[in-house]
Amino acid sequence: MNTEGQMVNAYVAGRGNLSPEDQALVARRAKAMGPAYRLFYETPVHLVRGEGVWLYDKDGNAYLDTYNNVASVGHCHPHVVAATARQSAVFASHTRYLHDTVLDYAEALLATFPSELGHLMMTCTGSEANDLAYRIACAQTGGTGFIVTENAYHGVTHTIAGMSPSLGAGVNLGQHVRIVPAPTSSSDVGAEFARGVQAAIDDLQRHGIKPAALIVDTVFSSDGVFVDPAGFLQPAVAAIRAAGGVFIADEVQPGFGRTGAAMWGFQRHGLIPDMVSLGKPMGNGYPVAGLVIRPEVLAAFGAKARYFNTFGGNAVAAATAMAVLEVVQGEALQDNARVVGAAFAEGLRALAKSYPCLGELRAAGLFLGQDIVTDGAPDAALTGRIVNDLRAARVLISATGPLGHVLKIRPPLVFSQANVDHFLTAFEGVLKRL
Ligand code: PMP
Image (cartoon, rainbow, N blue to C red; front, side, top):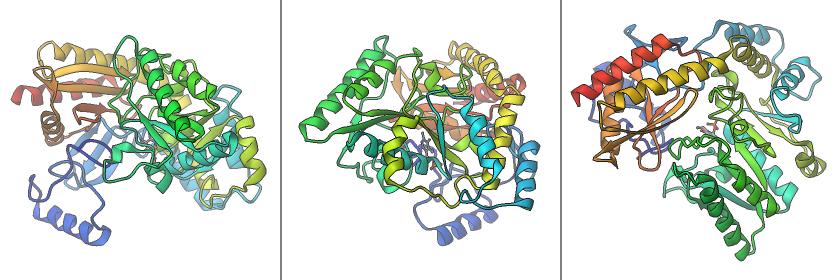
């Protein structure tokens, strides 16, 4: 078990070390919310408060958050909290009325994109953004075929769950969906990945299905984090465009400066996508997401369809997202991701010299994927143990990748060098005790 729906470190009843009070909460949760939810960790964490890179449990214990990319400007950032509160108190309605906030935000956000990407449509979740991208891609290309990587995760709607193989064999893929091998660390990864995409295009066409799009998470997080060499996506994008399809960059994970090198993950690849889906960090916890689109790609859909999303782009969402963008830019968090991320990677590489279970490390800014291996082979059980042992040491991370053997390290972007040192000390403590 390994990704969003399949977690190596998921809570299993009867394991772990839960207090009677938390056992009662687990039971209430199962009764009220049903069987489809999962909890992180053998001993789930009962959180009550967050501040910056720290989360606090009900007993006041502090946990270093090295995982949550949603609170990317830090938990409960005062500038963001104030903006949400201020806007909630004056006007909290939707995009069918003229109002400044969503336009101010759209203009400020679009200014961070290449000029070819000229429109922003607002949603509440990354899933909705990808679902909208699907509809727009079909309208624009006249096709229906979608290509995704073999352990991709793009969201929860019916269509998009059907493009999210990481949900596991129990969730069917769409009939017009083809999966391609994820990138690898091969020096020939660009050509290799493009060959997979071309084979999927050929297969779609052989079945009489016109390709509509290639969609990828530009850091391939659920595939295990594949980021280098920057630029390797170009031949695959050329292939889908040559087949009449569009390229959708899913920036729900890497967007808003996380990779350090750029505001958007696709920029590391020297590409200009046709559409870019956004989510998670966009509202620092407030549900706001969106889709950035080339005007010519939106034209066919815009001519046929009317779009309204009750909560997407509402005034509170827009004010909150604006405050997040102001913090990302005002506190130079992209630079921080680059500098602190590089130090983080260096620290992990130094540890790997003493601990052979630390295999390959792949990293871009504050998105790091650390392979855990035994005798060089992927070891999901050991990975799960490390994640749970770190939780016991009050440091929060998770695991990813098709084999569940990649530590997923993705802290808020306000992470400091002192936080890196704290992580590395706790991590070495865990490794020593294995
Ligand atoms: N795309 C990617 C790459 C994601 O990681 C996620 C969420 N994990 C989504 C889309 C879906 O976003 P949401 O949960 O906001 O619907």
